[in-house]
Image (cartoon, rainbow, N blue to C red; front, side):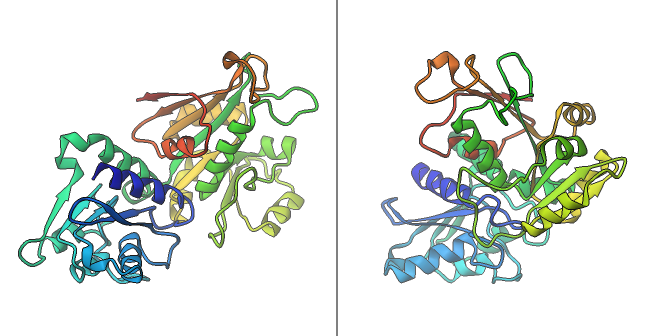
Length: 346
């Protein structure tokens, strides 16, 4: 079962950012011996949810009659939205046991556990939170759902700060360069952009760097909803040319004079996960106001390059500080050569 839950988590993590405003969810179907038959995930809002897709694939592959157990990272939904309830899809299947990674924080869609427990004799629902031996899997499911859960419970997105520092602790790249971090760090940063629904930045970053905030270095999600860019600009200095460029690239642009109002503003727009890409002044203000959930810092190696083949002491290092189970675990774990990472839980 452990392997099945890990497979469901990894499959769902591939679609972080693509499913918004829905959560990322994975589902694994097992046979009676615990063998994996199907692993599926929710791909985007409006498409089949993970459980429904897994059952559909099991039927397509001719293995539906062998399905006995369903492992789901999130409590199956129990309401009719753009798709039918997953609780009913499971009730109408051969599934005998449903393992649930974490309860649904959405008061509208919740209730799947109760509904499944009304299943005919011989079927049961079990929760990872009740199994101490699977505490790490439960935490993984919490991390996966953290952006969506934060919006449901706090009416604001999960906010990740991304920061890069050179060996001397400066955020300013050398003259003639736009970065001092390694290709590995760049790929992680762009995986984070891909997973995010919005970017928070300051007018100083816009005026000095003319950023595009697009996803490079890794493939972006296809057919995903437009991302938001929120610019903290107290003096109305945002150039119309930059705004028009971003809109032409498929972004939605918002401007706020008050940094403290941005989390609620993004929550109103259905944003699950927002990342901060800004300079030292705005980061200091975000820290002062405690407007963050996790903080990712890339520390460049002593060489300032961190390129493959350099001495281990010259490699970039990632430090994550988090107020709870962080979805950054999936961003850093993706890829063939993850960076060394230190994690600090607050």
